[in-house]
Length: 423
Image 1 (cartoon, rainbow, N blue to C red):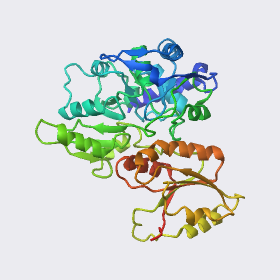
Image 2: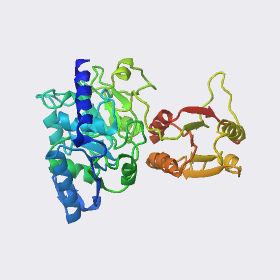
Image 3: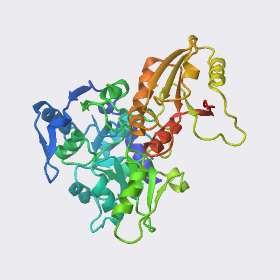
Image 4: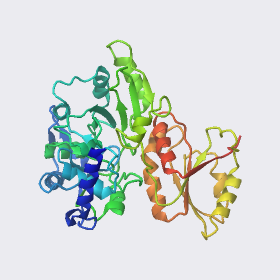
């Protein structure tokens, strides 16, 4: 508790300093060409584009000399980074986002060598971690490790004894970390609670004027945050604390095929396979405690796959539409954002009503959850910008990327209803 109070006090002091005022910056957007970046066997970046090299060097100076935050692309979402070794620099992340101090940060490294430099002396990687690192790094998988308090400030971990670390696969992210020669603490580059940005323009619409540099590396390939795994328990099992860019099915498959140190660990998903009230009260990783991913307009989840709970009745699309018209009488004309799979069976039952202004944002087909994952946050932000009165999001199956998609949608949605689908 004392640690959290010190973290909060540090952030409060930084808020009051003009140097981190949200209006202190003229935000520079520096274009980067990810295809111009490669890495040698030691993880040293080779950058062919002079423009990209200059942008990354400028961002590195902003991080290491000015101790300011920088926005950079990853394969998951755009991140708001600061030096992980420097408590005051990392505190600027919390101040810029308005992030609660008990919400930990993920540390990003550019190589396994940098990872090992962060860990306690003599620490041996669990066998399951070795398998996961070999198959999913660099990539959208975050692993929990014991925190070395000499190296990692407590503000990064919200006073917890573990630290979340990953190697991003986006060339710009890895190159920035390597050129800076420092791990970067980085949550998503958005105001706390809002949808995560997957394009540089999303960042500008939210944090423009609050950050000095945005590295624009194009749209993010994955579109959802990383999967977070805790493999530190005595039973050796893998606990998925936050589903994300690496599907649970892929983790299970890789462990079954490659684990050679006795019994294959089980893969357990938080809130599906186990509950842990302690980590919900004091999270060890982001995305577990607070409401997240919410645009500034209401979001309603349309349950078309799962069965309604006892006492709840499914309604027709027409019933839903009439209910919305009654509850949103002040909106004239009523503007509804609709996010559904491209092969949804309920769309025609809704959009035939011409009294409503419909703003459709198609996700991937039901058979392509990876496409839906990539488009989800862009859909929220696109419809929010269009000025809709409410966003309706159709449920997808919680398989593969669908587990992470529904994790985000359920956190974003203020309410849900069950919809009858055509037979």
